[in-house]
Amino acid sequence: MKLILLDRDGVINHDSDAYIKSPQEWRPLAGSLEAIARLGKAGYRVVVASNQSGVGRGLFDLATLGAIHAKMHQAVAAAGGRLDAVFFCPHAADASCRCRKPAPGMLEEILRRFHVEADSVMMIGDALRDLQAADAVGIKPVLVLTGKGRKTMQAGGLPPQTLVRADLAAVAAELAP
Figure (spheres, rainbow, N blue to C red):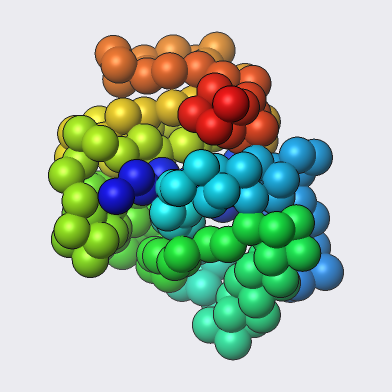
């Protein structure tokens, strides 16, 4: 099985320092929905792995998060694609949980549920924590320069095996020519 993991905010949709707190605030990045469709047509299972500390901070509830994800699923389907699963950490940054990236728990759970070896998987993210979580479990980290990606690259400290690509569409073009 070919599996690819995507962070949500800054990779699939526009990010916001004030959090994406409603379906109305969720807006896809140019080319991201088509990239997901392209990956799916090339045989990839596409899974979202996202920190959603806005839940733990009380900025929105799980029902609202579900509505945001429903909009995302519908938008991907309208572009001819499919998300196979959405995993998220609802905890605030100070919760010290194992599922909040850069901790590896969420990615370990995805690998377990999909019965796939880490070295065959890529994690596409725009933040250092995405890349660190991937690296911690042996998943290939890929930084995209959308969202926080440019700042992440400028700050440095990327895991040694990190690939850098312009956006999710560039990754899809490379993996599914």
